[in-house]
Amino acid sequence: MHVVACHDCDLLNQFPDKAAATLLCARCGAVLYRHRPDSIDRSLALTLGALILFIVALSFPFLAMKSGGFVQETRLLTGIRELWRQQLYGLATLVLLTCVLVPLGQIAGLLYLLAPLKWDLPAPHAIRVFRLLRHVAPWGMLEIFMLGILVALVKLGKMATIVPGISVFAFGLLVLVMAAAISALDPPLLWDRLDRRR
Image (cartoon, rainbow, N blue to C red; front, side):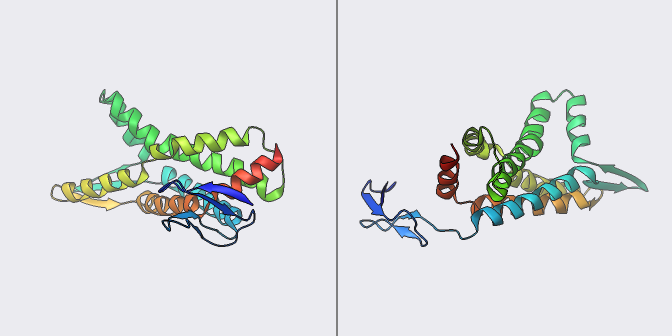
């Protein structure tokens, strides 16, 4: 048996160590734990899918602008480079962090945690990596970036023909797959498995 404090009403609830169901607070009914079967396998598969989508999103053209017979293609990294060239250093750094480095760090961190747990391999400093992932999660703003792209497409559509590239679709799928990978993760199970490896 282990004790879990409710984050809504602070009641201490006792539950069995191996719970294969959704656990609710006895007083207020708040969800204290939700069992996610095959959490590690599902999260690992989704993270590998996210890695493939991330590579596609960085490799292919993002948008093409057609105006008067002139076509200009851009990639995500060329957009960041252009912001830097126009001396918008803060904006270029923010876009690089939130749309490239943080998502890449999240994918790499999840792979570093989940692959060794799946195949029973050593992963030094795994607990630190998991804590870092939890702290960095709010900085992965792929959804906001995608929303900004949609607004830009609507605004620029009056001036020129905008053709979304493969990267836009890969980036949109990446948002969904990363959200699914993180929601499929079972943090109590992960903490338990990591604690047993110490």
